[in-house]
Image 1 (tube, rainbow, N blue to C red):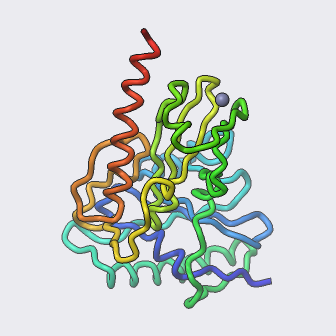
Image 2 (cartoon, protein in one colour):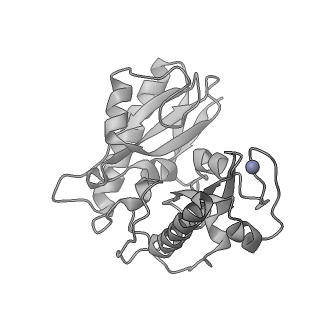
Length: 245
Ligand SMILES: [Zn+2]
């Protein structure tokens, strides 16, 4: 069976050098499926290339025994636009097919396929069903407002999905140390014409770090999702103080 790798997936994973991040693509041992891991901090990535892999799989959210290839960033300090990105992604895809063959995996690039969802992010989300359930103690919250009012939940991370901000996740920690994931789409209504600047010039790159709660002034679709994260963060600071009292 020949595995079809969507060009749109590779293009999406081709990040600008400026972001300080890059992507990896992983292939299942049977060669039947793949997933993109993006973004990966360049410094972490360098550690991986130096074979400093921890024993529990890859350090950037990959799967054990899968085969990972690096998707190097594109651009120099002066240029990064969509054309350069495309050319770079094309070059990478050709090299990838050759590399895979060396590992006995037959693959081809599917030029037209629409981009598949980012598996790693989807897995993290677990929030797609929007069941408000704690991963630790299985406590349920019936309504979003109830969970936001619960002083035993502390907001700990915002995992932005830079390809589709509505698929991002706000992560809360319960007092049992379990987590509650709330989909970003529960707070913000999707704007069909909004544009994402992620990975381009003008993007301060906050969305690449889940513990970054800084407000973003870029004229980007992601800014309003980030604003929610800032608010949630401020609120849980208050909750934390209350808990200490
Ligand atoms: Zn819990």
